Image 1 (cartoon, rainbow, N blue to C red):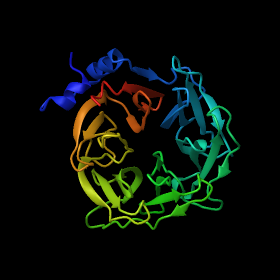
Image 2: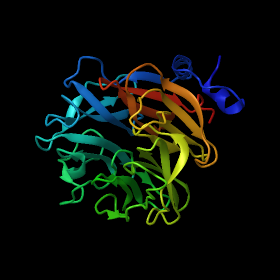
Image 3: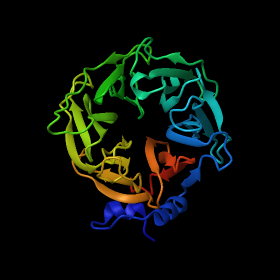
Length: 348
């Protein structure tokens, strides 16, 4: 049987299709589920996010409503208890305005956090945050940086905890031209320090700019980001001082269809990226692939497809779990699909 492990160990093995990958995951003790089925209390959903709970379960959140940007869109959540996904419930609706891009995050020192955006349009949205000590009871939502317009904290992808304990979040604004930056917190999210906007050479990176960084740390203080662009390729930036200052943004060879991406760094330094390998601005949001890098993101190899059929499969989120990795994504704007992949299947 072809397993994902053999992809890491045998040179030249091609891309594993979704059905074989799903079978390998399930036979390895993992799961592939829809977080909810067709019967749901909203018409559309998008921008899902994951976090693992203390008991080995999962929390998944997304925005749902009539349609993206409509006033009825709220933040929804569901729990996986180790056996089944519970019914979706509305976790946040602070006003009768569109809600966007939830991000779940856990720091074992402090608890669980849910970040999300609120606003009629992306350029003027505001970031809110909720806290839970156990992932079950959530606080009232409050503005992350009171009075900020444009968005602070994580814009789409999870923050990471750096080797010195600092939280690092990939952020961006869309006031006309897209501009990425890093937001850092050294006190468990009480206060945030914004980096300068990262430099973008318009001759090298055409179009709107770059947004929605997904970040990782390769060595103490050495952090990196991949970013969404509108010029057909994923961009990158690097920092050598724990994310305080950054290199100019530059293009990689990875294709990008102007849609969201996400990655994680495993303990052995291997990177796993989930993305649409489509090098066209506003290109199709299919297929959706899992790729690996063994050289800190300098080169990549697609190892498995999660989806290949016609439709939208987009805005992935991927996290490390006790048993391996878990990832989720938009499935045709109708559902959220979640893969729980054991480490053995990944050949780790």
